[in-house]
Length: 218
Image (cartoon, rainbow, N blue to C red):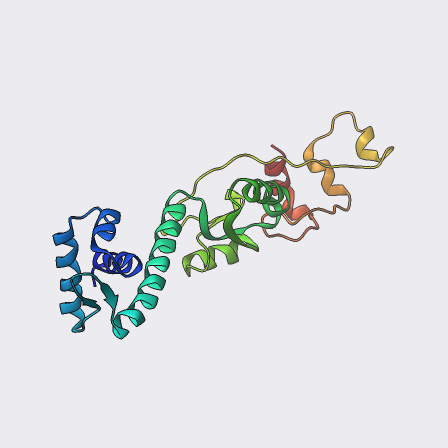
C-alpha cells in the first residue's frame, strides 16, 4: 500500500473537505480525488459517501482512519529513529573490554557517552581477551578493547591501535623499592603485587611474567 495515498485519505477524513485537504497535501483537487479513488479500488471498499455539499466517512472509512493514523504515526517514529541512528544519536552497541582497560578507560568513556549520546544504549562485557575474541567471532559483540599483546594473529579480525596505557606502581613510604637508586621494572617481581588483571592473567605476577612486566612498563 502506498503511504502517500493513506496520508491523503487521513487528511481528507480529518478535513471532510476536498479543497482544504488538497491544500494540506499540496495536490490539486482532481489529483486528490484520483488518489482516494485509487485507494478505494485497492481496498475494494468505499471510504467516503460523497454528495454535492458533503463528504462523510463510511463505516469502513471510520475503521480505516483509526488504523491509518496509527500506521502513519509509527512510520514517522520509524523515520525519526532511523535518522537518529544514522547520525549516531541513538541505537544499541554491544562491546567487550579487557579487565585492565575496563577499569581504566571505560568509566571515562561511558560517562562521556552518557553526556553526549544519552539515547544510545551500551552493553559492555568485561572478560579476558580470549573469551572476547570468541564472542566477537560468534557475533555476540560488535568489537572489543584489549591489550594487543594478548590478541593472536587471526585473518578474521582487524586490529586498530587506540592508545598506549601506562601502569603506575605504588609502594608505601620506606618500602625497599622506594629506596632503590637504580630501579628497573623486574625489581617489582621480588615482592607480592596486587593489581587489576592484565592481559587476562592472574593479578599475581610471578617470575615467569618477567618479560610481560617489562613490556607493560615500557
